[in-house]
Length: 411
Image 1 (spheres, rainbow, N blue to C red):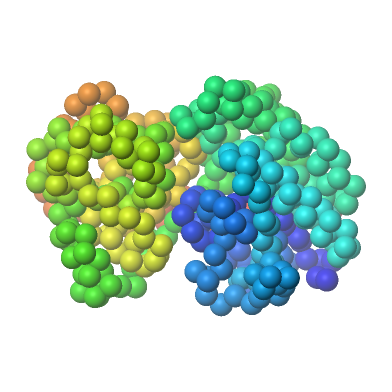
Image 2: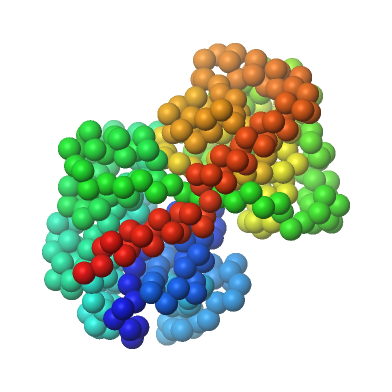
């Protein structure tokens, strides 16, 4: 049991740590930033199975602290955080609701068993509105506080049916209404939460990124071998990194690239969904254009950073989120960034990027103009982008902001 002057933070809603996804990256950097701070102790829920599950073999320097009867890992320590893995039933999309609720219940019970005083339960995204009333009563019963990160507009995501979208919106209302504090990672999201629900107990803390160069050199075999394997050349490809879902506007980006006159390749680093991929082939016929290259996933952070650094330009088509980690990482690494013109993205990129709309021909024209941009102009954009990250999105600053919030919640 930790000393009672240690603040216990239970993070609920991330599928894993350090793998693809904004929350997974965020949790890794947050716990790492406070790894040697005795005043903070993190407890992180992860999925033991199913989509995006926690594979601890992908992490380094872990200490296994508990195993299941079958020998699988149940709990481990990573960057001084207590990580617990929860098995989930195979019940389709509803598993996200099951998982979050199970993680909250586990955390409440852990507090009881370990006599933890005044914990903070930090729930990421608004999935469990159906149960939040009962859960908050139990959180209060152990002397805890309930903080919420509402994420972006989950209820707008194209992958959900109309009834599911209706539930996400209702769930958001319930969860915001009962939260002790709503932490928004976007100024636009904070404005929306305040105006939509008439609440004032909000604060803004962004995601973070860094501007350090990759540890790999331009001639490192890991990087050059990857380029060769994928049929790419340094400085001769545009890049996108992100989840392969409709609201990230892959259809628009691919369609417009097909229309452009660029001689460069378009490399897509994503977890391919075969059904969505076939839909795009039927609509666009992208397989007939050798410039379009789906190159798989890259989990090696230094390699991914090196790939970003050597891209001619980066596309960002996210439309429904808040501050998106892949955008921050691109601004920190890639000189020329071409962003979908929506409030979330302009809030981040400001004057350090170029912008495009979904109007036919708009992005294709921007690609052609970007191809003609001289090296000096690209350098200017790159310098401005890195300065934007340094001044507003450094992980050190964001870690300090979270520590301030945790301390303000102390009783």
